[in-house]
Amino acid sequence: MTQNPKINAWIKEMAELVNPANIVWIDGSEEQAELLRAEACRTGEIFKLNQEKLPGCYLHRTAVNDVARVENRTFICTTKKEDAGPTNNWMDPQECYAMMKKLFRNSYTGKTMYVIPYSMGVIGSEFSKYGIELTDSIYVVLNMLIMTRVGTKVLEAIGPDGDFVKGLHAKADMDENNRYIVHFPEDNTIWSVNSGYGGNVLLGKKCFALRIASYLGRNEGWMAEHMLILGIENPQGEVKYIAAAFPSACGKTNLAMLIPPEYYRKQGYKVWCVGDDIAWIRKGPDGRLWAMNPENGFFGVAPGTNEKSNPNALATTRSNTIFTNVVLNLDDNTVWWEGLDKNPPKNALNWKGEKWDPASGEKGAHPNSRFTAPAINCPCISKEFNNPNGVPLSAIIFGGRRAKTAPLVYQSFNWEHGTFVGSIMASETTAAATGAVGVVRRDPMAMLPFCGYNMGHYFQHWLNMGKVVTNQPKIFHVNWFRTNENGKFVWPGFGENFRVLEWIIKRCEDKVDAVETPIGYVPKPEDINLTGLEYEIEPGHMFAFEDLKSILTVEKEYWLEDVKGIKEFYDMIGDTVPAELRSQLAALEARLTK
Ligand code: OXD
Ligand code: MN
Image (cartoon, rainbow, N blue to C red; front, side, top):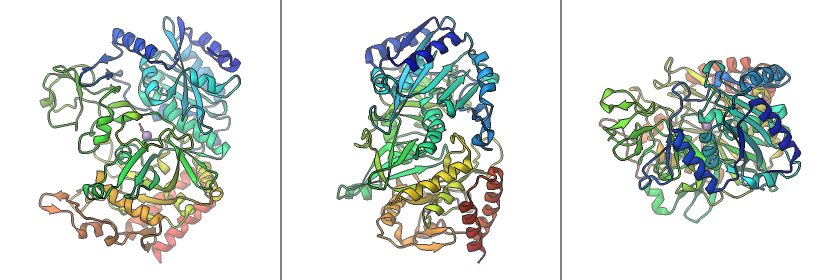
């Protein structure tokens, strides 16, 4: 399939290790994809859904012990342990290769090896990077066909001696005690064994586009970030772009596909989605930062997605989508999940494939059940989605889930302070997560599980990028999750978040003033437009101006408590934390105690 000797030699070596019955190259054609779908339906790997209601849609169920990313079994294997840093699991590369080879040996016996050449980014763009994933799973092939750009064209783009990321995946015997997702950044290599769950096996996503790419980006002078990208169009038709990082499960997909409140829609405001999870960011010829989404689809969490929370995401899943671990409605062969609507199907199978009674109180869909849907299905996909240069960023937003500490929104003083704000990002655990409620988890730039190298060096890379960019995006922090004394969310969230985005854009355009506080610039309450906002915080309590004021406050006692937590976190990362960020922390403390 290719004249590239590096590719051919590598595939030969891997085939000798895993010993497949035959090798099939994925060419990216619809004909081949259709044959694979038919084959996977025959073996029960996927189920065809109602083709009138959900054309081109399928259902897959993972093994019961294999439903999420496994961070404790994810490793960064660099020669020096220090290069992986204290926030990553580390193994010596040679030891890891030896261990993994034992697990991979003969794991494809009697099976087909699928060779998936894929591109992260538009094929041929100078910002794109290529990979080849070898897998024994048709489910992986079909997901990669949605999530990335796949096929012979990628081999042509790699050319006779181009580089590529080498990915090897085997479901093997799904032994969770021998499940490993390992990265060898120095060799451009990812090996994943004993899992069939998306985040562990769609190697283009977290493994390549974040872990390996962040490592490459540091060496090559660009950034791979866990960020959505959206465009805000004003009534004059001008579009400004924003990238935003939130820890997993804080509503990135919802923000990326937001529909502005009616008051704004009537004036002609629109939001365009460029990406919902990953941004590759570089300096453009104009000295600004430009961001592109390396993915080609959405791997979104299904529960909670509905006509109200995210109508665009729901519309995106109505065709050519693979659903994983959701409820199957046996009456009409469609799918359902908690939070889709208030009518759970009576005659249904749960995510495990067992008969399910909605009245039982047990969840029907797995809380981490997913849809894999093509980006082009999204009603608000940006026309710049396929622009090989990406889009210029006006603002970067960090966010977290904090009950009391962070205000609804604040702006950092400058890039260095903004890097500090990203580095101290945190979320409090909710009742939905196992373990104690209200525990602060630090997740700098939402990259804690995804940075392919030492976190302290990553912070330094952020500081360095700020120095090379002449026209830096402004950096903000948002918190949609402030609660009142009864524990109720004060801010309505979802589409209403547009009101905060409007303030952010106005700040970028120098069109609105702000109040300087110890943590940064906070809006004057009257500058957040509340026209047309109707939200019942709790029975009988409609959101009012006073409530807005209450979530814009900066409470020094909470922040001083946070300073202690940040110190501990920096100390855990150790000497690699840049001196500039230590000074930022000291300066914050001084401002708070002044
Ligand atoms: C995701 C995640 O699946 O961040 O995108 O966990
Ligand atoms: Mn993510």
